[in-house]
Image (cartoon, rainbow over all chains, first blue to last red; front, side):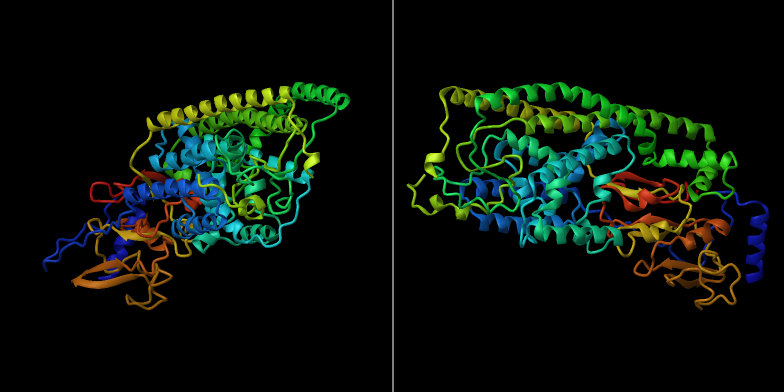
Length: 423
Length: 197
């Protein structure tokens, strides 16, 4: 029997490995043997996705209530731990608002991609909450924020120039993530999520090292990922500026005691500021006008640079990489073959088709490069304009963009301790 | 401290009101925009969730499924379409190309973890069953079965294990681009009698 089988195998090999050939016809069993069924364990049900969204909305509501109305750091902290456990360790960091940016982008640019409703919810709900109540999502709902928040031990003050400079990275990262998602190349934010390895309790060494690095840094610099890298943070920063309500340091009138000054680990508390005197004011106005004129120039320059860089960025797309490789192999510049190229040849598709596809993706990247570069120019320009605007401030106030409504400053305000008439 | 407190001049107070109105306008526009975005996205939205699956007809058994999953033990496992199986005595998915003997000796088996169980059915047929606790999804047996046999063994993402990451880590590294999103109600791309290859 063994010899027969081997002979059959050899015959098959000689006949050429025709795909789909039933080389050994399925037997007709005489012993009443029943064919076992291939098991197909089902994925997590849609209902559970709905529960995720419900938990998100509840957590947002709770965080907003505790930050704005109850003014309780302890309650915010408990909600934060709950979110860390649920969205982080139980859901293993997947379905998150940060990653949803890419799904929404892909859905907008690729009509073939159907975005799940839950993901739309995860993208929109925190943005809407921010427009209403400020960054309460960052305070106690986002698991990435939570894991950094619990390790803050000895926060140091980041110098303003560094804070402003690094803060731009988040917007650039957002631009890159949108570019790669729109072209269907990669989900950059998921690939380089520094904390997801902790949530899953498994991951590659480089990502684990990155995560540990962020947490160690986070002991001294409050929430480094949120402040300098988080692309969703970049979105909510902008929206938080125009929020309807926002957490306040003091529940009533500020008595200018400056006790809250050093309590914020994120450098988000702004001192009262006098406006500029008249001669400086005129100078400032002139500078502002010059910067406003500079913005379109920066946008154009960025766009130009982005377009020049687009062939490099296009290599993020698997099809472009494959086409490049095929070109190398077909032209004989390399003698060995890559796995992907072999797999492509096995499909029998004409190679020209692949080149055309890659060229089309390259053109998309060309346009995307303009947009991305222009975006970077715009971000830098707007930052410069923003830095040159001085506002007069009468009280100690949280910077609406930087403040995550964590509530650390609440208990340092003596007004908080004064008995108040019931609301 | 109190005497340092800058007072607002009347025109500044006016500017503040103006700013507040402007902010309210922009905020309203943003909220409307978000609503619009939901409506626009809801059109191509599927209420149903999507999950990752690999197309066994595109799979080249490169072995990356075993090593690139975010789980320590890959969610991809070998599955068996019994209807296509030839129940060979010398299964080329189970045994090394030239086995010393047709027994469970490790030197005879293709599977690095011994995850394929061989049981006698009737002369000369044997049933091959995958022990998913042992299978690491390396695809060595799939290659063996596909090259010399009927191709009844193939790899699939097992949804009791898969975390359904937003961006499948294996799919990112798959050289034959065999991974795609499929509706959660039909989460497997199985081989069967009608579509053996």
